[in-house]
Length: 169
Image 1 (spheres, rainbow, N blue to C red):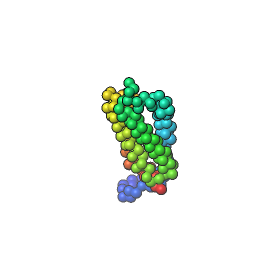
Image 2 (spheres, rainbow, N blue to C red):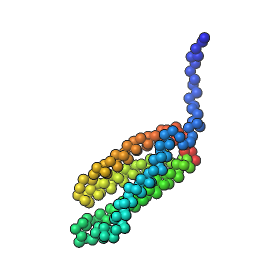
Image 3 (cartoon, rainbow, N blue to C red):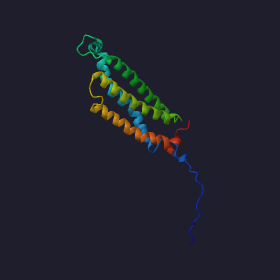
Image 4 (tube, rainbow, N blue to C red):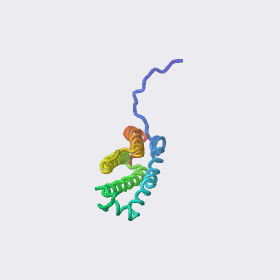
């Protein structure tokens, strides 16, 4: 019996069987779906207290109040706008994902980076305004979660053959 020792020089790989939402992209899909829900559940109680409780909002803006901190109300407004933009971007990302748009991986990466920048920036500015540690345990945990997620999923979006085969429209 002879052993075939010829080496194939055909390096083309058929990725058509990779096209579609499967494999690790299922985890991305789950994360995308739950991300806006988590964002709303995380921020709604805070914003409800600050914006819809007239006493709290008044105290934040009353310079004679003992709880007044210069620029804190402005920071809260900017934080709210940025979080609303991140929420809107997460919803757009879901649509781009399920319609398999070519731009999805780039937008995913941009949103991952933007989330980290907003978290760190908010913590630093808030820490300066309140003259306390910028990274309390909850903030540090959220930043670490975002960094780990970015460290896993950004390279995946950049090198995955499944991503390249799936997002083609």
